[in-house]
Amino acid sequence: MTEKKDIKAYNYIELEQEMKAMGEKAFRAKQIYQWLHIERVERFDEMTNLSKALREKLSENYKINTLEKVDVLISKIDGTRKYLFRIEGGSVIESVFMKYHHGNSVCISTQSGCRMGCRFCASTLNGLERNLTASDMLEQIYEIEKDTGEKVSNIVLMGSGEPLDNFDNVVKFLELISDKNGKNLSQRNITLSTCGLVPKIKELADMGLQITLAISLHASNDETRKQLMPIAKKYSIAEVLDACRYYFDKTGRRITFEYSLVSGVNDTVEEAQRLADLVKGINCHINLIPVNPIKERDFVQSENKAVQAFKSRVEKNKINATIRREMGRDINGACGQLRNEVMKKGEEVRNV
Ligand code: SAH
Image 1 (cartoon, rainbow, N blue to C red):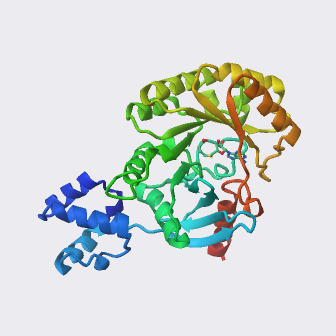
Image 2 (cartoon, protein in one colour; image 1 turned 30 degrees about the vertical axis):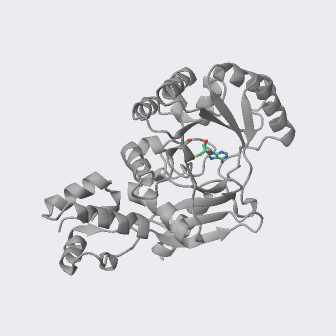
Image 3 (cartoon, helix red, strand yellow; image 1 turned 180 degrees about the vertical axis):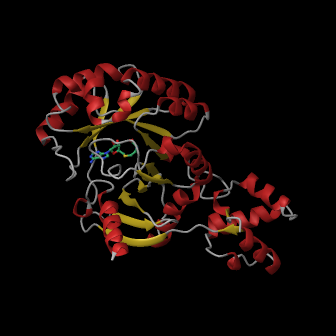
């Protein structure tokens, strides 16, 4: 038996082609697209304006991908919700729903696990499990909207995974989520965070999307960056910054630099000055993140005093900087930790 095709991962034009190939009228695509991306039905049977014969034909050839909600943790402090979803194949991913005064934001995963190996990050501890499909990414948003009854207005691709290491699926997701026939979310409300895969940043720039690019810089010199992030051995900071300039030239979008502060590693005022010198001339914003320690490593969060001093020095250079507000402190482990715990338990259960 050939594997059923993932109908939620087709854009409008592709779906039209699928229908034509089945000998159906092109306008069926419009109806099906609406059922999938507006009504968000989970079974072909629910597509009541299609004939029974067509519904049967569809379910023989296609599947409607859904995620299984495994758990939700709700913060008593600020209502942040951490979701654990099981994806096809059995592994578990995390997504986070956050309420801000400017709207609701969701942080989605783009891969189950990750192979980038950043030293401070929990998502990469067990390597890459699998790439998420475009519909796995869409579903994180759709499921959360269904569960909360609220609209999501901002999306950040900052959960587990390296989005640019899953380029085609991520681009397809961006296209689908911003499609006027679907959720129609403005690309300007989407931020993609990358550890800095230089050729892929350029490729993304050439696509002319309007999303915000966030770069995980985390150091002001290559030596320190190499200690924190293996990808720094492949691309120098200079090359990453060149790619950022290219991205800005092509899209006109201001770049965000993320900088996780680790005590005694990258958090001195001298480093803040070097960082300011590096990014000078780039239209950018710096997001400082006090590192969230994971038990597998001995990184220590910078003291509040050091964080403030770092920020002041950056700002003294007329560069915009903010400290990332910690959401859902009571339900937070570092990103990916919860997933790891559940996966480990799952293994124990399976081994019995
Ligand atoms: N792979 C992408 C997106 C994933 S994580 C990237 O590297 O950008 C989103 C951000 O959280 C990144 O800047 C990442 O470096 C940072 N991050 C991961 N684990 C962290 C931790 N324990 N403490 C602080 N920041 C962390």
